[in-house]
Image (tube, rainbow, N blue to C red; front, top):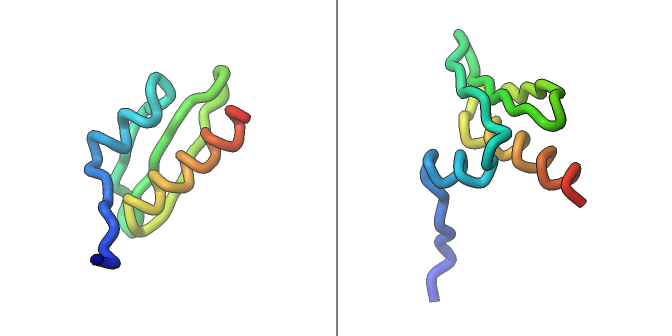
Length: 65
């Protein structure tokens, strides 16, 4: 059995956000993911875009409980 894990594609990550995803912006040294939950704009910045997406997803999941 392999120890490899499957990393979702960007379009698959965006699908997980449903209607909350607003944008992915490349900044000089990082990426910024913006989502909106109940009218509140939330921004997550990281040099790795998958980390920025991950942080935004964690916030979305934690608020949906």
